[in-house]
Image 1 (cartoon, rainbow, N blue to C red):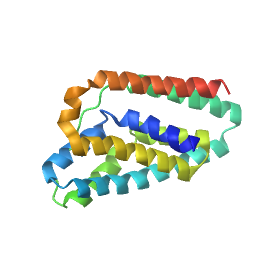
Image 2: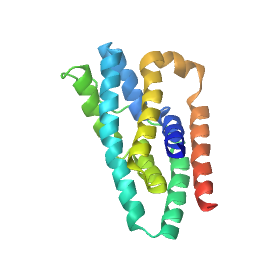
Image 3: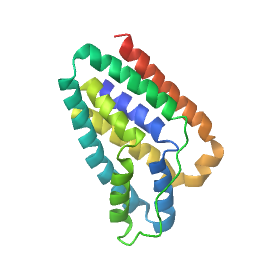
Length: 183
């Protein structure tokens, strides 16, 4: 359960204000089909994060334990800094001709490549060495955060300042990094 809960918390916090959350907001506003958009987000996230978790588990099996701990801690510290740089939605919403589900699936899959949440999934899978549990946790975290964007969109971002969400997410990464070094 630790792998699922920690993966959920870290990715849900990280996704707040992330470019893919902004993309979810744009797609929900454009298509007005929240269930289709959420299904596309789910499909893309499961595929993307399962591949990322596989890569993380492979790294854990390949890199010696002490080196892996230092690499993971430094990775989490790096993410703590990265999360403080706000993302912008750089998608082109004019080229959405495949319908809500397929457009969301394709755009989300490619937007997640190299994204903080995907790289976090790699690091979490290396830490927990369990593809299924990490993928479940990170996917649930994405669905929660992006579901908020799809369901409540702009109302939510008017109530909570993004800088505070980013500070909280950054703190989570620091705690994960310190936790790894304390083992």
